[in-house]
Amino acid sequence: MKEFWKRFRYNRGAVIGLVILALVIATAIAAPFLFPQSPWKMVQRPFLPPFTDDTLWLGTDALGRDVLSGLAHGAYVSLLVGLVSTIVALAIGVPVGALAGYFVGRTDDILMRLTEFFQTIPSFALAIVLLAIFQPSLTYVIIAIAVVSWPPVARLVRGEVLSLRTREFVEAATLSGLGNDQIILRHVLPNALPAIVVLASLMVAQAILLESSLSFLGLGDPNIMSWGYMIGAARTVIRTAWWLSFLPGMAILLTVLALNLIGEGLNDALNPRLTRKSE
Amino acid sequence: MLRFILGRLVKSVFILLAILIFNFLLIHAAPGDPAAVMAGEAGAADEKFLADLRTRFGLDQPLYIQLWTYLKGAVQLDLGFSYRQQMPVAELIATRLPATLLLTGVAFLLSLVLGVIAGVAASARQGSWGDTIISTLALLFYATPLFWVALMASLVFSVWLGWLPGFGYSTIGAGYTGFAHVLDVAKHLVLPATTLGLFFTAIYMRMTRSSMLEVSRLDFVKTARAKGLRRSVIQRRHILRNALLPVITLAGLQAGQIFGGAILTETVFAWPGIGRLMFEAINQRDYAVILGVFYISGAMVLLFNLITDVVYVIVDPRIRLTK
Image 1 (tube, chains in turn brown, purple):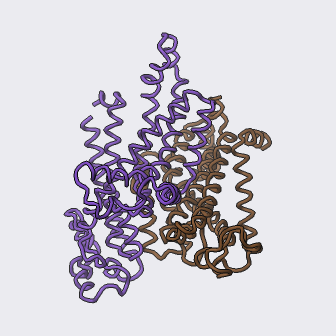
Image 2 (tube, chains in turn cyan, red):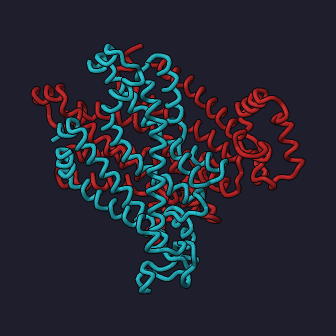
Image 3 (cartoon, helix red, strand yellow):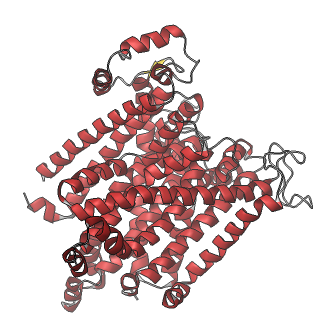
């Protein structure tokens, strides 16, 4: 663990990412306390520019809603959707990949064709189709994102399992009479964990981008304030109040950037063999 | 090589079929009457239209016969009728498709060329200022929401600076013909194509850079160096050619993403393609159009994949030579 932390710290970008993410998480947690009022509530005249009112630092939007409150509540939604949809995607992708890689042959063929299908079809369009047909609610947004983001997990896990299953410790486990499920769960998957963790951190970032794109198009949960929705709503007034689109976009950019940086840091720290080669 | 391409073609046909079956299942999985789903938001269509739909798709028949009717229609490019637009979906898509092909094609090429050039430049001087700047930019572009870059670009370059048009496909009412028209469209294309390409430029740059660095450590490069070949020759002939393979594979895989991005850029720039059509259809809950665009976009992605396969064969002689 100490070794891990040392290598992680060595990557300056990753540390910056960690600081930014910590700020975003703090904002998300503090949002209901700092801004107990609903972010949908009108608090002042519309189009109040930023830094002109002592209580409303970032001004108000086209309907007189507090922009800072919207950003804070949006942070919570972004992180929640990013995290939960990644967990769901892992719950689909890890078993698919593990089964395909461990049992090879026909199981592998069928599962990989399925994975390929989901990887080939335009994923964003698929998410749109799912949300348009089922009603857009937070649950369905999360499901739609998970459905389009599990294939890379399955491929990665399959590859890892394929290379692990012929190793001696797996043979030893088989000889000692362990069942397939025990071998996969206890011996094969833990060894694939570092690669999964790195991919997962990058997936959270992509999920946040995806959620914001869907909300921007009006396919988000209509009852929840999110960064993508804020940009979509401010789009028509961009000539007169550009900051209403600019600020939530910066929030998305920083959060996603932070997660990507952390992902790279984790990669350096967890798979040192791969990265140090280039130095 | 022909067999390789043919194999890919057969696979594409199966994927298209799978998309159609998927669409069909979705219509039936949706809450409510499938006829109402196909017609648009419940209550939007009149009874006669719903009755027509029921007979046409045999909605009173068993499911497998319905599926057969649906597939037969789709293969003949009958994608249903848009009640909202009072037009067959296939016709709607056909009028919008060229604009999307132009936008995605240009963005795809642009990002690939720019990404590879930037990646090669960055890897040639690893750790230098140039490398740091290029890598940082790639990191930023990779984290930027596409629709937001598009909005900001139209704000800066169109609204504030007035350099480029930020709206539509051509100047309305200008009546340009010939070269003037081409130039006009090209001007309208600059902002949508660059903003759509940015994210992908970042991906290809990172891939090219790491792939170049990886290949340059291989033994045959050392041999080439030992033979006394010039650095530029090694870079171009030996390293780049091998390093490009994973980039091309990735580009093929990313084709679907480019179309997804096009939905967003077309929406922001009012580009009259099928992405914009999908956005309009979302707002009107026009399911026939949404599913039709989804199907056609799948076909488009497979076409892009096929093109990258051919390029792959050209770059990698190993596939060309094995039968």
